[in-house]
Length: 357
Image (cartoon, rainbow, N blue to C red; front, side):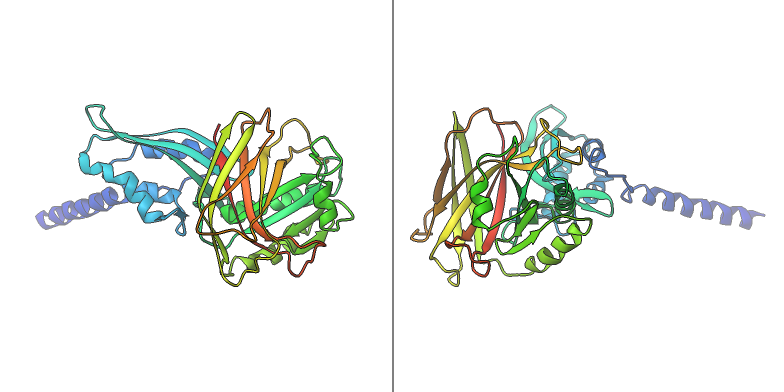
C-alpha cells in the first residue's frame, strides 16, 4: 500500500509539472482583422517574463520591418522584463487601414515607479495567412509589384478586379501596391492621360509592373493577376528606395527619397512617379455596392534620367486641399517612353508610405 501511495504521489507531481509547462505554450488565437488589434493589445499588456513567448504568435516568421526581423521585434518588446517582474507594457492607438493592411500602434513600457522606459510608435503591415492576420513588416529592399487599375464606380465588371486586388493585397501585403485611377466618374482627377498613355480601350483595364495589360474583369481575375505577379517577386530588385521622407505643409506635399539604381537600368526616359491615394473612399459605392479602395487623388512624375543618384531625389505634389484622413503616398521608378512600349516601359520597383496628419 505504501509503495502504491508513493507511486501515486510521484505521478501527480509529473502531471502537475506537465500542466504547469503547458501554460506557457502560445495560445491559438482567432485573429481576424477586427479582432487582431484587440487581441494583440490584451496579450501584450498581460505579458510577464513567464509567458513572454505569447507575443511571437503575432509576428510572421518572415517578418521584416526596416532592418528588424521577427526575433528583433520580439526581443525589443520582451527586453523590459530584465527590469523585473512588475514592468507594465502598453499598446495604444492601434489603427488599421483595411485597404492596404497598414497598421500604426504605440508601444510603451513603465517600471513600478511609473517611469517611462520606452515610448515608440510603429508603422507596420499585416498579412493574411490561413484566415488569420500577423505582422509582416514593410519588406523593404525586396522586389515589389505595382498594379495600376483603370476603373469607374459605374463599371459593372470592375468590382471583379477590385476585389481580386484586395485579396491579393491580403496575400502579399507590403510586397504589392495597387492604385485605382477612376475614369469619367466623381472620383476622376483627369486620369484620361493614364488611360491614353497605356492605350486602354475599355474598363476595367489593369497594368502590372508597367508591362502586363489585362482588359476586362471576371471571376477568374484573381488567378490571372496572381499568375503574373508571383514570378516577379522572385526577381532581383534593380531599384531600391532609402530614406523615404515626406512633409505636408498647407496645401503642398514635399518628399525626398534616396535611390539605388542598378547599372543595367536604362537611364533614357527614366522617371520617378508618385501618387497620393485615399485608402478608402466612403462617399461613393462601386457597382457591387462597396467602397472604392486606394483611389488616386493626386499624381505627378519627375524625370530622373540625368539625376545624380548619390543625392536624394526631391519631388512635390502642390495644390492639395481638403485631404482625407487616410492617405498613402505610393512612389515607383519606371521607364516612360513615348509612345508607350509594353516591352520596355517597365516598373523597376515600388514602395509606399502612410501619411500621418
